[in-house]
Length: 332
Image 1: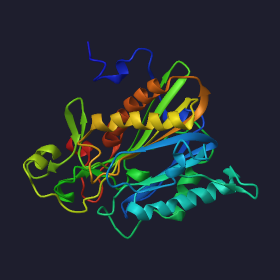
Image 2: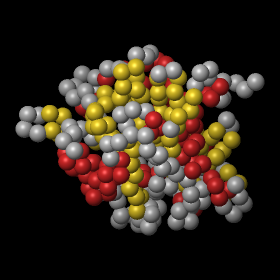
Image 3: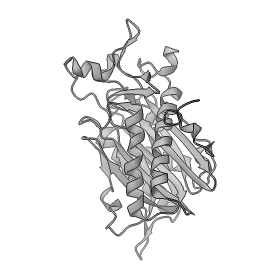
Image 4: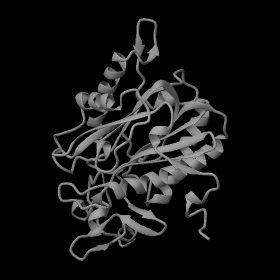
């Protein structure tokens, strides 16, 4: 019998569902394959109570302070995950423009201001570093998401996962492709899902097996990030990292609980990314509540870690090679 700690699917009563089946969230991508970058947008047409937890030492974010439990705004209307490093934060303006056209936002009396927190990852070394997500790309991703639910969500080398890579301690010549992944489950009426752009400093593991990481392309062997670190090999500067994601649930929670759920969901990073939360990662997780199902925040936080781990694995397995960087599929 499989150990349920190693096999989350062994949890009794848990059924896998598409992320798009969680009410209240739609997802859209936009990318430039030649430039090696892109962005991914989650829209919440009716708003979502949201929280955030940032664990990495090099984050790039926007509108995260307003998600603190003591602050006024308690609903967001979109969340942006973007490549392009700090430049990619510009794409949030495009998401706002789309939502404003839909008359969605925080009512300020003279209009509605869309609330769109964002996080970025560093993908400039892949493709053309002068091509970055901008307002136009953000608008395109939001338009692709629309405000209708239930759609199939692309995974792998799309959106914010287009330029994502992992295992970069020895530079891009030893890196492998990361990507966008999703995974969602249903237990009774409760639904919990994850959307993640995998661009970590370390390796990606699944039950002890290395899926992607520092890879010697000549000898066709994994070198393992932690072993390279222990042996004191020189780390390449500005190698560019950060895994950014969203956990969404149809459970009903206040903002304080969503911040805790975001925090607990980082356990999924720790299980799948080795090492994770380093000084050169900007690891960030948003958590969003879109429904009215009564549940326990500790349960949803635990399930958030489960789906986040599985979404990371999906993103790696769905990725395809780009600009000479091989993917998991190429090794098989």
